[in-house]
Length: 272
Image (cartoon, rainbow, N blue to C red):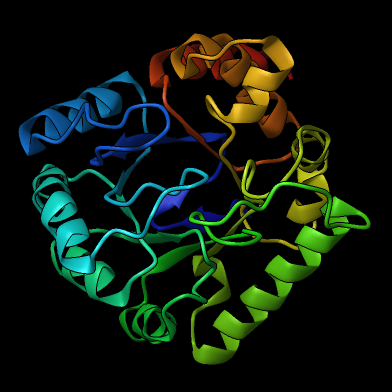
């Protein structure tokens, strides 16, 4: 039987569009400080084929500083509410229960947490109580720290073990298994080779039975591989990696360029 996640049938690879409402995100910081622009972009991404729109109000790029919760909420809530009113499947990218609570009340269906529901213990309880879907991501260190360097034996197995432990903690707290997706955290404290190994090893993570989310779009390791300093110039490589992730059984890819990725996935799916 084909799995369903957050009301979405996972009968083909699904697209999660990135809408950052921040001044300092690594790729598109400052572009959507006007909520109207963020809302328009979110609706455009849906028209181009996005299945989920992921709205974030705090940058998680290396070296970024924490955003005050009230500022994060001020940035994201109008965008989440407007998109939800248009029946968009909205994911709120946050580590904080207070932000998630307000966004869920406004119609968000997914909580996407880079800390795998660890940074704010109340967020785990909130997700269990409300029955929301969650994305649990692996992250080594915090955004405000420098966490480069090797720290793994077998990076795929180490990340897999961590995520399965977090999934078990969520299920123990009352979050239904079918509401949990796992994200290996491409770019979060991993080297170039480790990021590539995690994309190649997505199938090992998928074997556990949870939907796998992969977000490699425009990230710094692509720049190191290609010599491209400008994140936007990395879109062709990002599209290729999204297709490769789905070939390795990722159920959802989190991307900036929805239209190009949708085309590439349509051809890849037809070839398979």
